[in-house]
Amino acid sequence: MSGWHQERTARDARIAAGRAHATGKVVAADKAVELLEAVLRPGDRVCLEGDNQKQADCLARALSRCDPARVHDLHMVQSGIVLPEHLDIFEQGIAKRLDYSYSGPQGGRIARMLYGGQIELGAVHTYLELFARYFVDLTPTVALIAGVSADRDGNLYTGPNTEDTPTVVEATAFKNGVVVAQVNEIVDRVPRVDIPGDRVDFVVEADAPFYVEPLFTRDPAAMTETQILMAMMAIKGIYAEYGIRRLNHGIGFGTAAIELLLPTYAERLGLKGRIATHWALNPHPTLIPAIESGWVRQVHCFGSEVGMDRYIRERPDVFFTGSDGSLRSNRAFCQTAGLYACDLFIGSTLQIDLMGHSSTVTQSRVAGFGGAPNMGSDPHGRRHPSDTWMKAGREAQGAGDPALRRGRKLVVQIVETFGEKLVPAFVERLDALELARKLGLELAPVMVYADDVTHIVTEEGIANLLLCRTADEREQAIRGVAGYTEVGRGRDRAMVERLRERGIVRRPEDLGIEPLDADRSLLAAKSIKDLVHWSGGLYEPPAKFRNW
Image 1 (tube, one colour):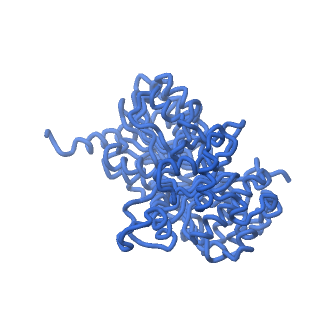
Image 2 (tube, one colour; image 1 turned 90 degrees about the horizontal axis):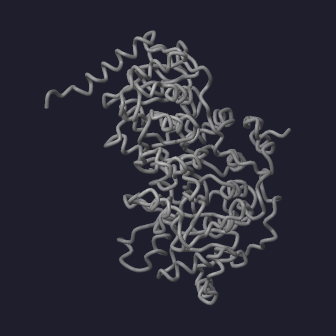
Image 3 (cartoon, one colour; image 1 turned 120 degrees about the horizontal axis):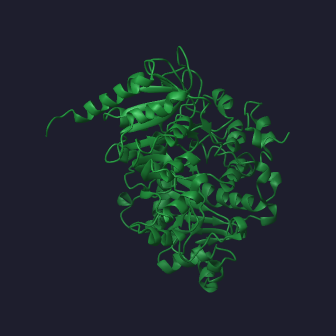
């Protein structure tokens, strides 16, 4: 070794170069390109903050305008590929390699660029997996993050959408990296210190507030009777039977319908206080009626949701808030809570195969996973019992010494048998396998593996995979709820009926549910405007959801 301080010496040189474009730590927005060209080096590992919702968009635009002769071959390690600029930098040669978790609106474009060889893919990660690698072998050299405000010493207020920021800063600042933050404004004193100034090297006062996507808002007016029927089955056939109190909901109309049925349908079933009391969840607006009805005791959040800030501020008994009154979110902590402290994850997917593997990757779209594989997995490190966890474990194992019988987390996929444009959700073979073949990937991008999935809910019924004892039983249970898809039509009808007799496949009538009762009148709120009324006017929905 020629010395033990090479990284720190390199860091000091980057900061010295950057200071030529700053006043103290503060950099004007029109100097952001020059700043990045000063602190970045070819081949750097860069985390550009792109979360589920919050985007460091000013810095993303600046990075995309850098001179590829000076800044090139970057290795991007970031949660979300959401903005066009996130992919522009690969077309321009500024970036070369990518490790990420979620691509959302850029899913189609990222698929084309992967097939076209414009992106060298490391892996599509889960959130916790990528965060973990920040501290092992994907530590950022430079982190470009976003906050609400900063003082001139660099103390940051990240506000309700803190999301990934503390994790990114921790990994970068304490391993000789450079941290650049864009903020909406420079203030004399921040409302609370979310990131101490000694971890922030430069602050760019952005030319506009950072972009936040209302990712978790679902309009009750768009909810269908089919989704309501599936929600009724999930509540009666899973939530009630397992006594699920600690849970996480994924994104989708199916889970939003469950939230809106808690104060109505679930109330009539006498389930208040017995289910859905403690949540790891973004503040879904469709949860407002359940909160106001006294169903929900506590919610810890990955990030916030547009329009929910005033409501959260007035409900500190439910949400985690700071002394300033605003939400404190943290994706790494909330993912950990969802993984180890929740007894159920329920979410949707684009494809499910005959074994129960599911993925949001198709031939034309690589949407990534986000946190679903963390939430939707059975954590073998768990050691504390709960009635829900132990019941699921007994169903899965059946025999053995009770004191050594591991519990099971419930992982539920709630999907309509046909998705948008009548594309079947059930397939013989996942598109993810074809993507892996075309790109030469060693590991196919599967979102939730079959051995983690415990239940599948469709409009046709519930398949309880915990009770299956053979691969044939599992396949027929899945075919048994796959409706009129090709997979569903290929079922062994006699075997499915035997599975139904054993309670492995359950139709609505087996649960005492009349499908014609699945009516919109059951929804606690039937529109966004109803949610505003439930909140006492505290919920302020984005303009695109207002029709009054």
